[in-house]
Image 1 (tube, rainbow, N blue to C red):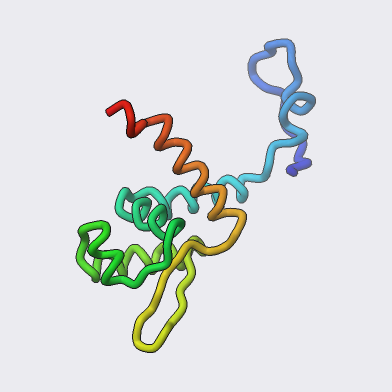
Image 2: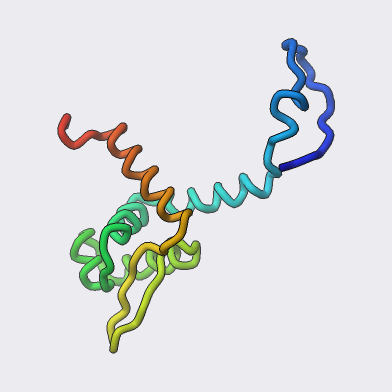
Length: 126
């Protein structure tokens, strides 16, 4: 929480910013962190790959086939998702397998994506 003191607001609407919201407003760095997470998923292809990897563990070639993209393009998106801590990889022989990281952040993002897809584009109502 940010305990900074806020100046009085230009318009008095009968409530105190500090009293109502200011005492619990997170620091701007927290919002920057969240914006970075949304940027990581701000691409349709990356979002599809992340969603897929929340449901299975796969290699680049199979992911490429599932999302109908070239392997280099998928690898590019995987690097971004991995650098953001959203996915993890493991090597088995010459093959590298990817899956969603087992974190609270990824579980919450996956749940949010599924909920938003159901709200925005219900499959049964197309």
